[in-house]
Image 1 (cartoon, rainbow, N blue to C red):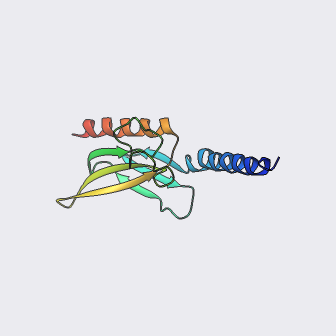
Image 2 (image 1 turned 30 degrees about the vertical axis):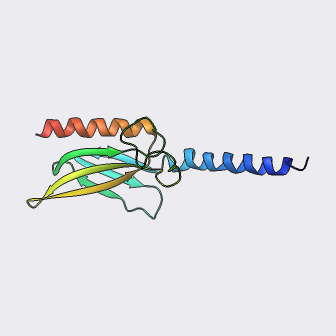
Image 3 (image 1 turned 90 degrees about the vertical axis):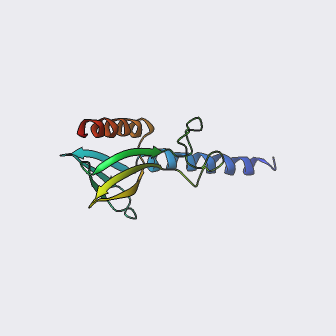
Length: 128
C-alpha cells in the first residue's frame, strides 16, 4: 500500500511525457515544396520559419533522432533520449561560389520525414 502512490505518479508522469512528445512534439512543423522552394513552417514560436531555394542545394543528407536505433544516421547513438528528439536535414548549398551547410531541424511524423528526404534526393538528381 505504501508503494501505490509512487507507482501511480511514475505511471502518469511517463504516460503524460509520451503523450506530449508523440502528439505535440513529433508534429510541430509542416513541410511544403512549392515552386522549387522548401518551406518549413514551425508551430512553436521559438523556431523561425525557413524557406530554402532547392536550385541552390547541391547535396542532401539527414540525421534521425533517438527513435531509430538501427539506423546509421541516428544522432548520438544510444541513451540520448531527451537530447536529440528532432530529425535534422543537412543541406549543402552553393551560394556565391561558396558551399554552405544548412542544418534544418524537422519534427514531423516518422514516415513523413522519410518521404521528404526521398523527394529531395530525387529532386536533386533531376536538377543536375
